[in-house]
Amino acid sequence: MRQAERVATVLEVLAAEGTVDVAALVDRLGVSAATVRRDLQLLEEQRMLSRTHGGAVAHDVLYELPLRYKAARHQVEKQRIAVQAATRVADGAVVGLTGGTTTTEVARAILDRRGITVVTNALNIAGELAIRADLKLVVTGGTARSESYELVGPVAEQALERLNLDVAFVGVDGISLEAGLTTHHEIEAHTNRTMIERARLVVVVADSSKLGRVAFAQICPLGAVDELITDEAAPAETIRGLAEAGVAVTVAIGAEA
Image 1: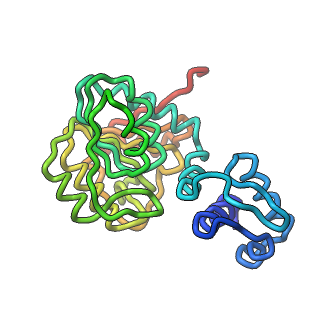
Image 2 (image 1 turned 60 degrees about the horizontal axis):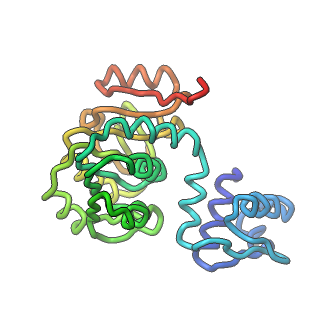
C-alpha cells in the first residue's frame, strides 16, 4: 500500500473516531510499526494530528481532515490553476462551483471580483464564502456526502435547474478522451451534470494527475466542456487529444517559468 493510501486511511479513522492506535493501524494497513510511526510523523508535521504514546489524536476539526490531506497534494499546481481560472470571471458574473480541492482554490481566487453571485453545492466552499458580504452566495441544498462535502441528489438538482450560470468550474476525479469527465460517485456525477447543463461556459479545473484517468461514474462527455485548465506536468499527447476533441486546453504556468 502506497503512503498516500495509508495516510488517507489514517485520516478516515481519525475523522470517525478522533484517535488512532499504532498497533491497530499495523493490522489494518499490513505494514510495520515503524512505517505507521513515519506516517503519523508526516501528518503531525502537517498539523493534522498530535502524536501520543502508542498512537495519535486529531489536531484539527475532524470533518476537515480528509479534505485537508487531498488539498495538500499538488497544492501549488491547484493554486496556479485557480489564478488562471479566476480570469474567466467578470464583475457581476454568476459562478457555479462543484465540490473539490481545486474548485475551493478557485473560490478563494475570485474573492476580489465585484458583485458576483456564487452558486455551489459544496459545504466547505459555502462555509468559506458565507462571511463575505460583498458577494451573493446560493447553496443548493441536498443530501450531504461526507467524502466530498457536496450536497447531491434531487433536491440539489431541482435548485440548479431553476438557475442560469455564466460560468461553471467543475472538479473531477478523471478526464479522458474515451470517458469524458468522471467521478467516484454516481449521484454526485448526476448533480454535477445538472450544474454543467445550466452554465453558458463550462471550465474543468484539474491538475495533471487527473488527466487520462477514468473514475466510476461519468459526469458528462467531452462535448459538454468548453475548456480545461491544468498544470505544466500534463502530458503533451493528452493535451493534443483533448484539443482535437474540441476542448480548449490552458496550461497554468508558475510565475518563475
